[in-house]
Length: 192
Image (cartoon, rainbow, N blue to C red; front, top):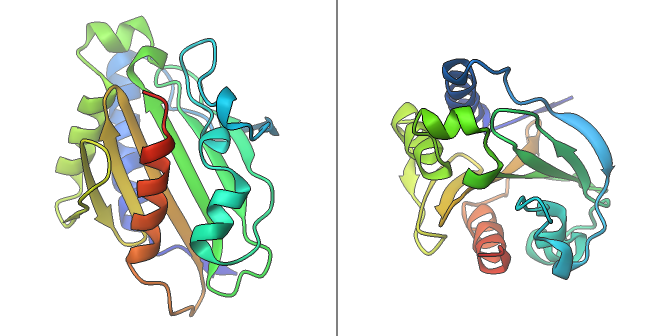
């Protein structure tokens, strides 16, 4: 059994996404498992304008930052209205970190109805920031970023992304620098 120290931020992010989905008349984004990602950096930008987070940050990238072996990334695509794409890496040893999750929402992947209601990746980010008043600024990541627990939320151009960690029950030893380092690496490799 493990616990997530990112629960408050996940609740904030989920509430913002649900609110955006309801206001657009759509369903909340689903986390349906899809196929494993092809982790080639040159295929991070997909033909539909979305981004494959497993191709942006490969297993080797994740391992280099967390210092532990990780499983191949598993890609999941959320449905309308946000077009969210999620990559999850399990951690083999799971001494402190149980898993790493990368999430991407791009303005161009949102439905037309979301656009007509004024939603964009930046608005989704700003709404999340307001919904989570106990956040800390995270500098040097994208255009703007904040941290709550072991999760970073950021906006970069027309992309809102998050980098989060699931921590084992009773685990200690992970500092705030690990999520920041991974988010900086993600931001640097993110297609513009």
